[in-house]
Every structure is written in structure tokens, then in C-alpha cells.
Image (tube, rainbow, N blue to C red; front, side):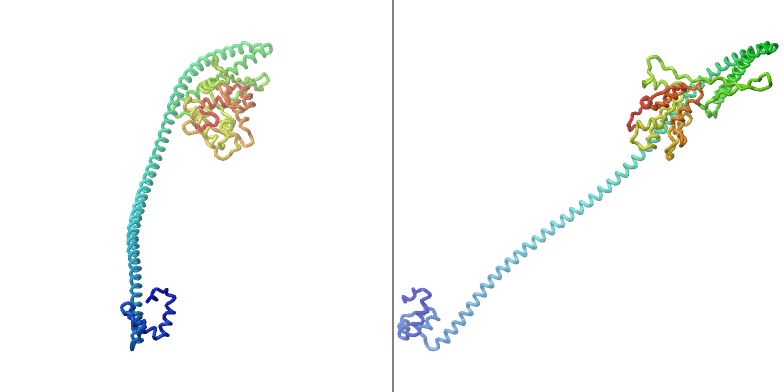
Length: 430
């Protein structure tokens, strides 16, 4: 039995020896123990009758047992895998349920967020609509207030101008009465002198001609004064208009009967306009001088339109330049009662317009003919206005300043005009 200590590789040799040497096998069998060797090994060693069948049966049973053991092991392993899979499935199901709950919560939160956003959008649209309506109403109220203030200012200026004009008309009427009496006396004296000199016509023809000329001039002057007086009285009547104001009255010819039955035309020398004298300590180019001139009684302010706008607001389009200047001049008319005539070059045909309705009685906006510059129109305008009416021209054009100065008009610069209007070059005001 010492062979039992041999390694596994020696078993094949031992088996061969035992199988081939019957005596040796019998000696081993005599000391063999079935309990120690096991039933299959003992049958092979002792070899009783029918041992091979018993050994095959034991082998089949062992195979079956081994198969069952293997199946049991496989079943246990499969059960373990199944349990692990079921546990993983359970965990996955639990995770799926949890994710569904989380997803449902997120969906609910998103829906709540969308509802809140829609409510906020509706509220915002309502607020914007309300704000737009409020802004529109505010703009309408501001426009109404501005219109009422403009009308009120215009009415106040008209009332002041009417009062001043009425007072001036009273003074002119009194002066005209005195002048009529003086001219009547002079005419009577001239007629008497002419009658006394008629007897000696040849010797006194020169003197008679002189007296007759003086009498004719006096009569013409008397007629002009009477016409002015009639206009002044007519202006005081309700519904009277100022049509013809500022229109020149040319010096008409005076008819003189000569000794041969022919009439000779003699013209009275034209009356020259004199510039308005400034108060002491005021210089021609000062802003105070310009403010004084635009407030002189009955003065006409003539404005060289584009000469002012192109040097003051060159970045604006021409229509916007014109609107800005006309609006500023309209404010001056309503504020000071000044008569204004602004002249633009007529090259820009589109977008022409007149003064605001509130100042149309005191303000004119004209455009020169297409082939004529506004400079020529302004020079002719100053020369055609009644010499008794003071005129101030606003321009920086050297030629215009010189020409209107020769015609007795005062001149102010663009800078002076903008200061009077309360505007500045390039300013967004107005």
C-alpha cells in the first residue's frame, strides 16, 4: 500500500503490473479493504464473478451522479444568474418608475412654466397696449394744450397789436388833420399868389410854375394822406383786411398845364427810406440791437431763407430746414407781433408751404421764380416797400447787405437772428 504515496503519473505503471501479474494482484487483494478503496476500485482489484457488470453499473451510476451534480451546479449557477437578472430587472424597474416620476414632475414643471410664461406674455401685451393708449392720449392732450397755448398767445398778440395800431391810428389821424389844414392854407396861399401873378404872365411865368408845382405836390401829398387815413379808418372797422399792406405806392406824375394847352408831367422826387436809429450804447452787430429792431413799431423783417438755413442746419434736408426756420419765425410773430417776409430760392419745387394759420396776417413765405435768385427778390422787395415803413433784413450775403443798406434798410446777421429766435446752429430745437 506504499504505492498509495506514488504520484498520479505512476498509477498507469502500477495498473499495468497489477493487471498483468495475477499473483501480485491476489496478494494485494488479500490486504485490500473495500471501505478504504471504494466499491469500484475493490471490484477491479478482487474481480469477483460478475465484477465487470457491477463496475459498469457503478460507472453508469457515477456518470449519472456526476451529471446530476453538474446539472445541479449549473442549475444553482443559472438560478444565481436568474436571481441576479431578476434583481437587476427589479432595480431597473424601480429606476424606470423613479425616472417616470422624475419625468412626470419635469413635464409638470415645464407645463407650469409655459403657463406662467403665457400669462406673463398676456400681461405684458396688456401693459404695452395700455401704455400705447396712454402715450397716444398724452400726445393728443399735449397737442391740444400746445394748440390752445398757441391760439391764446396769438390772440393776446393780436389784441396788443390792435390796441397799439388803434393808438397809432388816432395819432396819425390827428397829425393828418393838422397836415390837411396846413396844406389847405398853403394851397390857398399858392392859388392867391397865382391869381395875383396872372395879370403879368410873361414876366412871372417862372414864379407861377413854381407855385403851381408846389400846389400840385401839396395836393398829391394831401391825396396820399387822405388815402392813408381812409385805410386806417377802414382797418378799424369790423371785417377790415390788411390787403395791400407793405405794397409800394409809387410817386405818381403831376399834371401841369402849360401855356400852349399841353400837359407836362412832373414827378415828385422819391422819398428815401432812412434806417432805424439804434438807442445809445447799442452796436449794429449786437444781439441787443437785433432784439430792438424786430420790435420797432410797424417794422418788416425780411429773411434770406436759405442763407440762414444752409449755414445753420446744413445736415437737414431742405424741406426740414424750411420748416424749422418758418416755425421759429412764427414764434417770433406771436411773441413780438413782428411782420415777417421770408424768401426762399424757387429751385426746390416740391414741399412748398405757407406760414401757420395763426400768423398768416403777419407773415408771408414766398419762393423766387425759377430763373431768379432770392437775392434779387429781396433787393427788389426792400426797394418796393413804402419808404415810410421801416425794414430790417436778416442775411449774411455781402451783396444783399450792401444793396438793401443803400435802400435805407437795417441789416442783421444770421447769428443775430438765431439769437433773437432762441435757436443755435445745429441745434435740435425747433
